[in-house]
Image (cartoon, rainbow, N blue to C red):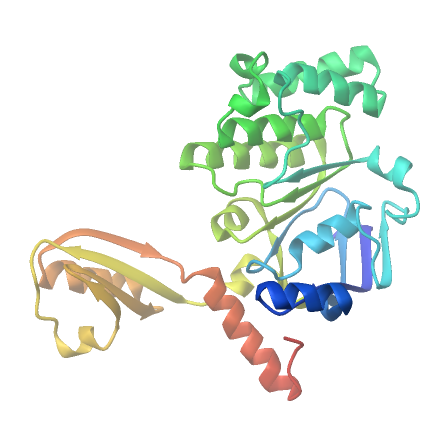
Length: 331
């Protein structure tokens, strides 16, 4: 890793959540006497990211990924710990800080809903005080790379999700930020849009040296883009390493048979689930040999090899950590 550019030390974030009993009587009681519970979104998170790195930050929904991004971008103030991004504390130097970062939230847009895309770009130019010549150069390059020419005069509310995400990515880069925080940028996108988004992120990191922190629960995004990955669950950082460190040698082999089959005993032992003529096997390490055996022994119509879902990997690591420290992690 290069010299630390983003430094997070023992970061914590707690939220107070109001609770009430269901029904009208519960609502009336809630007005008279509020009841709260504390949710620990982050607990003791520490990591460093070097300048120009492209790092994946993964975990299931509710793990603490978006909370981390909001603290790093200055939107939230942490309950404890320290954080520096390019030498600045995000929530203390917000104006200077946001001028050097770009942020894309997959489920929110920074574009104006009823305005054409190009007018949103113009407003962002004014907000970031980007010189006209620099803005035109950046805009034209982004429009070409992200294939936005047909969309410039279209109101944002009429864009598809993939079109809006590409437009949002361009909007976040108009001021040529040094750091790019991407929070679920491919969520809900079709396969073509995902590939285009990944290719652009990779090129931006390689050609401009933009530091990228990519939060996602899509393992394909991480494998396509990141050499380093951090895994978080229940607000606690469980792993910081490579994609290879995260992946086990287990694979799921999904087989569609052309007719009902009677599996041999050693193949039946590997069955994880079945539905009609589709059977899902779980295989450890010897995947090519297993595929060769199945295709030779049975009438196979289609076959697909895939990684186990990231949620299962997280759950396994979570259980390992609990068994090692003997105390468990906050639920």
